[in-house]
Amino acid sequence: MYRLTARVISIVLLFMLASFLLTVMLSPYRIDTLLGSGYEEGYLGHDPEKAAQWYLRAAEDGDPVAQLKLGIMLLQGKGVAADTMAGLKWLRNAAESGYAPAQYRLGQEMESGTAGSPDYVSAVQWFAKAAEQGLAPAQGDLAVRYQYGLGVDRNDALAFSWASRAAAQGDAVGLRAQGYSYIFGRGVPLDPARALPLLSQAADRGDSLAAEMLGAATLAGTGTGRSVDAAIKWYTRAAEMGRINSQFVLGYLYSGAEGVTVNHDLAAYWYLRAAEVGHGMSMVALASLLDNGSGFKASKVKACAILRIALSKKLPEDIAAEMAQQLAREESLLTPEQLQEIEALEQRYSSGKGISTLRADLLDETLQ
Image (cartoon, rainbow, N blue to C red; front, side, top):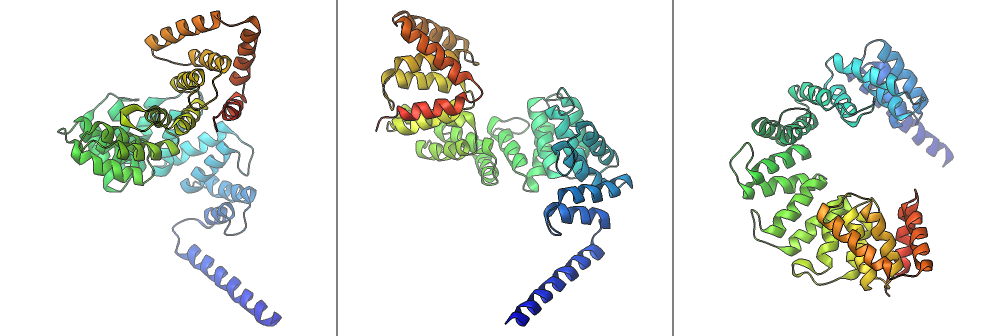
């Protein structure tokens, strides 16, 4: 039995080695780049340090794939000490050699402000270079930049053109951007019904904004029959992928809006999810639920503390003014001890760990 097992293992190892050698012989990539990838991806044993060493050899010899890989590792501090400027240098070397994935990645880094302040103009220029070579993600992102005029003058016709090219390759952002053009009639005749299948495809590919747009369309009956159930389905999908506005809308719907049956537990859950990332209007809603004892045990003190924090966030001016007046009225009726408790809770919930504390404290107040 032992000999048989050892023989099987030997055959498997030989097969793996032969497969790797065949891959190396047929691959268009350099051997040192492939070795770096093998150590990075774990085919040769997961060893980021060795991966970086092999990538460096190939990068110094001018290989753009290795330069991109090494640049990313330096930016992330993976296998090497993090070094933003060195990482960007290698990305730029690869991008300037005409390597589309590096051009796209460099554009992303420019837009996110990795080197300092965001540089939207440079980002669009790099997106365009990659898009012109047919890289679908770059085409989709370029379409969106033209739609919103971010780093470039808004141009609906160009936005639709680039979105169409990306969508033809199945790119989620391109599909969503194309749907956006149809649903708002920008760069193409208004055709909401044609937009919905595109948005649906984008959502199925994991685009959360497309799912949110479908929630809004089905709730309003845009391009389709109005369906609150369908809207909740799409908003829930978007909310689960982290869309804060969708989380707030679900809290609003489950509070009894648009004919939805009141479900205080779900309303509180989604308002909490959005509040945890600093959404002011969700905090206002939570304060109202606590004040009224809807879904939670009524707590004037916690309601006032949360409303104080909400007023430090970005709120519509009319709502902010109304909430400030209401808070002043409520606190004028409280005792000095209660006001001290409110101040302590405000500091507690506003701290670095305050969000998780807020969730725990409010869940303790959930009505059973």
